[in-house]
Image 1: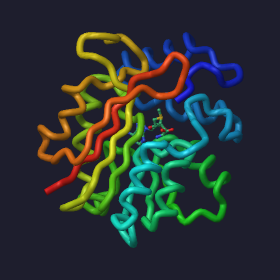
Image 2: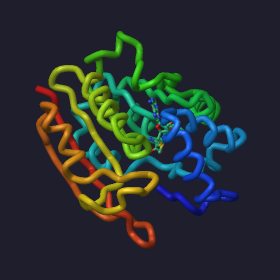
Image 3: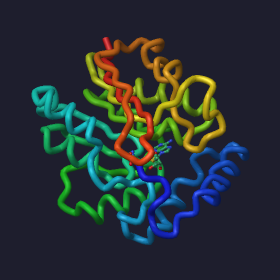
Image 4: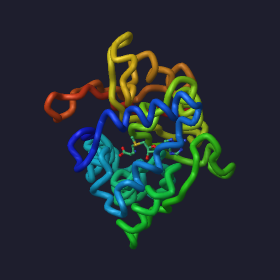
Length: 226
Ligand SMILES: C[S@@+](CC[C@H](N)C(=O)[O-])C[C@H]1O[C@@H](n2cnc3c(N)ncnc32)[C@H](O)[C@@H]1O
């Protein structure tokens, strides 16, 4: 994820805005602003890579039989690249975001899409979604939330999973005790292991540096519900 190089992006202003929402207990109140500032141009969203996550692409390639006809959901789908690639591997994909302008960008970007894009809140999702998905995909949502909301987000992601379902998590990572005031706040190993403490089994776990300069450490994890 490129944080600093999209046109007119002021990193310090951005962090101030996020901090002020977090301090007034409104941790999700700022996302729509980011997408609205792009003024209809998905390529102007500063955190959008405009390509599917390479770890997801590799996972889909290596496990092509898992997806056929199954239901997947992309949490905090942003501008839609990851949701779109999942449909190409046979999933019936729902993709949601709390930011209405993100969903508008997705619909304009992919007018013929098979993905069901909609506005929804992970913390208050439609009841029919509970335990309804064979694959839950999360990329970089937990890390933009503070404190207790991170745990609530993890638990809500798990609650979307059907029995025997798979959960994929992609995020920035940090060593325990380091970068504690960063925005976004990367996950440390203890925090991401919360998926296992909450009852999922770990099928695969990768800690790696991405290809930015300087490289940014990341986690990629695959969990399964019993
Ligand atoms: C850092 S962005 C990542 C977007 C996309 N997953 C990506 O990797 O490019 C985090 C996304 O999560 C969304 N989000 C944050 N809290 C949410 C919530 N409670 N429910 C749904 N979406 C949420 C934000 O609007 C934003 O689009």
